Length: 325
Image (cartoon, rainbow, N blue to C red; front, top):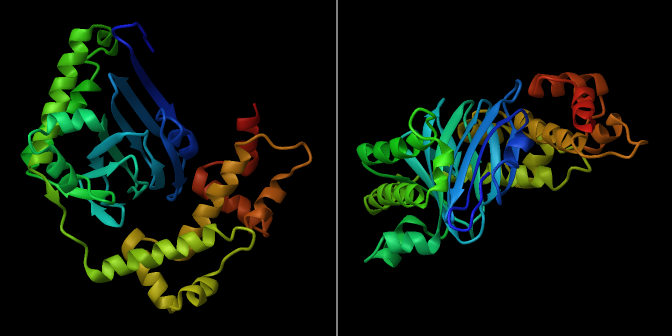
């Protein structure tokens, strides 16, 4: 990190080995990440910030359920660089040729595929308004409606913005230390905002999902919210079916279409992430791993340990030992 009165900026290039560690990497963001697919987590966050503008790239090698919000007073635009399959952003399908958009007043939700590489810009509202003149207010209502939205534009325009952002993170093209020069900050800001404004002017809403898909997204959200609000008692598929007044077959259809998994696996993954999150925190000396596991509804301890290792690539005891040291 480098600071001076005229050329303040920050830069970090961080490797992460845990979904929670990854969620904490972006400065001034409030996020929760839950790992969904099995295996050791490997992530990377490259984060650049100057003159109120934040440009970052993050990569994850496991499917992750993300939720949270950005720092106050900004708009966020994210463009996938590479992804295996599709993602789900705010109950809308996210593809390589689309963009995710939201305002800091809005909480976002994203389920990323097994491998996900994305570049993004968080830009102060006043800066973006100025760049979009003379129709800024109308354009902002179009691009950033009342809820997070997936947008599309001509592939060439998205490619140009994506290439502009990626060049910032290419060591062969740019050295972060050059940001100590105000001329570099002005030139980079102008290039990024110029490309961004051009894309936003030409963007439109991605095709709306079918009514059945929207309905199934709603079922998945209701099921997940109910399960996470009742962690004191393990929620079964039968409990969810009774709560939501749907059949077991329909519940499975909903999870399979929306998240490409089944409700048992998905909800167990969220509970295992809850255990891991507690194991990363300081624990009283008399607290045992079995106590934390029991709190999240795991009673068969050998099976719990095996499921935990299958998802995270290590035993619960290894997680606790690592974060205590």
